Length: 230
Length: 230
DNA sequence: TGTGGACGACATGTATACACGTAGTATGCC
DNA sequence: GGCATACTACGTGTATACATGTCGTCCACA
Image (cartoon, rainbow over all chains, first blue to last red):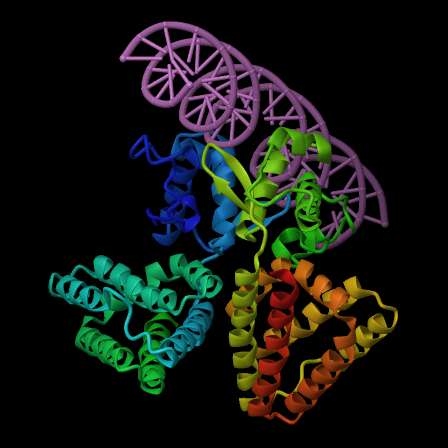
């Protein structure tokens, strides 16, 4: 929830001034987003712009802009003349997200293998970093690396529109990814093995096997979610 | 560019007051969006918030909110401390959009047929309305109905996340859809035939044939685009 | 003459004040 | 006692003023 500035693009923000202080809008975005993810606000609750502004330490204007962005990422719903309503990701939506992920990722794998592109650059390094984080039991780091792993697969395909779509789902997944790993760490070796197998299949440009692996890999998580979430 | 209010959702805006006057933000969104689509502003040009506010007849605040929304739809890029830069959809992006459409639509068709759901409700009516618009040579109406046709296919699949993603591409397509039909009206009968064939394949729950039809249908347009756009 | 820096104009980022619509509450009527 | 209605409080929608960073220009200097 902290690397989401500049709409996910690394547009360099000038570059000369070095690391400029984050804008009020970004701070409001981070603050509200974290609050929703950590469950400070109940689902369906309306957020008070003035109260948020006081909490963040800005005026209403940056808060409003942050809320619009959070709406784009489906964290809140902006009801006209009523305000921003908290919209917690539920099990049904999570299942749909994983289904959408499978659609995009499997298409990416197929096209990558069709063109003989092999595994993305840095794929192995990401796997190793993930396993290292797993040994440290740093689930937060692991979840982020897992996201990066799958995102690099999609980006490797070369379609920026699909990659943007895929990235748009990312914020909604972070919370549940961490939770999934935290509550079922015994599945860690399985996940790691599947990652390595996927890397191998891609390196061999075996699209069909890649899709099969993704199907299994992306099916497990929603099952876990359903198991302890309903 | 006129039915895009409330972030594409028909959230009923209260309902009791009937059709309330559009907000300043919506008017700004429509005005700027139309201006970009009709080519008033050159690619890469920075938009002046004050000037836009004067044109639309509001203050800067609704203009800024409209620009943020236009950024989410990739019509402009918001460069920090510089402003909103016009970002015209180019041929490469258009090709990627059609590829993304194929990925989502073919998945929808497959799942619909797997579950034996048949064609979406109102599918035939949409086809007939499209053909009527074609006879009137009302290309604008045709393009919109075509969008609705394909969107209903995606929605019929039942995955709201994928449907939202799909809808997010819609604004970017409108301009080119109209242009494509306008500049190659002789292809109209082909398009209409393909629509009817797709409807028949879905009604028969023939997923494989539906995908084949979509592959042809969604491949033609980018080819046309490349033909007269570069 | 070309280059570097300082200054001024200007646009965006932010704060705040006002307008308008909605929700909740109290009151009167049936 | 229950329900409809008017009123009040409150929060969003919008406008405007101020703060701050950026870009272009001009001038000094090599």
